[in-house]
Amino acid sequence: MTRAVRVRYAPSPTGHLHIGGARTALFNYLMARKSGGQFIIRFEDTDQSRHVEKAIDNQLDGLKWLGVDWDESVDIGGPYAPYRQMERLGLYQPFVDRLLADGNAYPCYCSEDDLEQERAKQEAAGEMPRYSGRCRHLTAEERAKFEAEGRKPSTRFKVPAGAMIRFTDRVREEVEFESDGIGDFIIARPDGVPTYNFAVILDDHLMDISLVIRGEEHLSNTPRQILLYQALGLTPPEFAHLSIILNQDRKKMSKRDESIIQFIQQYEELGYLPEAVLNFIALLGWSPGGEEEIFTKEAIIEQFDLSRVSKSPAVFDTDKLKWMNNHYVKKADLGRITALAVPHLQRAGRVPAELDAAAQGWVTSLVGLYQEQMNCASEIVELSEMFFTETVVFDEEAEAVLREETVPTVLSAFLKLVGPLSDAELSVETIQQSLKQVQKDTGAKGKALFMPIRVALTGQTHGRDLNQTIHLLGKTKIVDRLNRLLS
Ligand code: GLU
Image 1: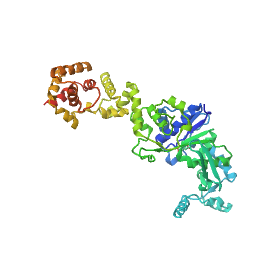
Image 2: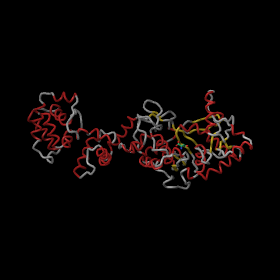
Image 3: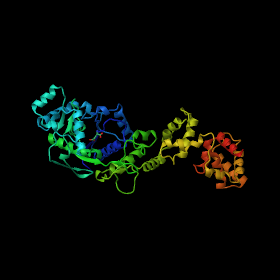
C-alpha cells in the first residue's frame, strides 16, 4: 500500500467541469482513495475577473455525478477551512511581509503601460519577454516618490540569478529549469490579493498537501513555486504533472474544439452513464497494463498507480467513449436507461410530459428495443424516429425490396389478419402467429416474408426485433402504412 497522502484538486471557478479538470480531480481522488489519504477540493478564485457565478457548484456537481467524493471542501468544511482563496486573504500577508523583510521580494511600481512597452521592446529585439527587474534596484527616494504620486505597488519575487531548479516529478521524472529563464514575478497585486503561484504554494503548505497532481500546463509554474518554497524555508510537496490531452487528430484539445464534447455536464445531459465516463477518463493517461479496458471505480482505485501514468499525451477517442458507454448501457437496468431516455423523447415532442401507466409501459418497451444499440440515452430520439413519423421514408435498398413481385400478396395477407384486431389484441404473440399464418397463406418464408413487412412498416431493411417493433408501432400506424403501400 502506498503511503497515505493529502492531495487536492484546485480549480479556478471559471465555468463548468471540463474533461481536463475532471481527469485531474479523478487522479487525485484515486490517489487518495488508493492510499487511504485525503482528497481536498480548494477553489482558486483570486482572479476575480474570470470568476463565474455558480462555477463552484458546477465543479462540485460534475464531480458528484461522476461518483467522485471528497474529504474537505467548501461544502463540507474541514480542518483546514476555508477552502476558497478569497476567504483566506488574511493568511497570505504575513508571508508577503516575510519575503519583503528578507529581501526576497520588492515593491514594483511599474504600470501596465510600462510593462507593455517593455514587452514590446523585448519582442522587437527577438528576446523572450520577461520583467527586466527595474524596480528591484529602486532607491528609498525613488520609492517614496512613487508612493507620493499615489502609485500602489505590486509585490514581486526576486528570482535568484544563475540557479538550477531540479525536482523529481512522479510522472515526468527528472525535471530541471534554469532560474535565468524566469523573470521576477508578481506574487501580490496592488490590492494585496496574491497571484496564483504564490497563493497556491501557501495553501498547499498550510493545508499540508503532500502531493500535487495537476495538468502539464502547470509544469513551467513549478520552478517558480519551488523557488518560493525555498525562499520561505518550506518543504515543497511532491509533484506529478499529467500529460496534455489530444483530440482524435492528435492536436492539443482546445476548449473550442468541436470534435469533442468537453464538459462533464454535457455528458450528463446527453444521457451518458457516469460510471462509463469515469472509466473512460481514468484511462486518459493511466492504464493498469493488459488489454482490459472496462473497470469499475473500485477496480480502478485498487489498481491505480502513478508509476503507470504515461508521460506521453493522452488521446481523447470519442468513438472509444461511445463504445464504452454503450457497453455500460447494455448492462444497465432498463428502468434506469428509460428514465434517462424519456426526457429526450419529451423534449423532441415524441411523448407527453406526463406519462400514464400505459405510456410508461410503451416507452419502456421502446427503450428496451434499442437498449443494445444506444451509445447514450439521447440517441433514442434518432433511433426510434420511424415510430413517430406520419409516413415512412424508404431508401434505395428498401425500394428494391418493395419491387419484389410477391410483396403485395404478403402485405395484403398480413393486413387481412391484423386489420380486424384491436390494439389490445395486437400482442407480440398474435403478431408472431399472424406472420406464421401469412407464411402458410402465401408460401412466402424467411426473408421473402419478413423483409417486405419490415420495410413496409419501418422503411428500413435492418432493425430490431420485428414482432416487438410491430407491436410497439400499434394498430393505427400498421394499418395506415400497409394501406398506403397497397393503394
Ligand atoms: N487553479 C489552477 C488551475 O485551475 C490550479 C493549478 C494547480 O493545481 O496548482 O489550473
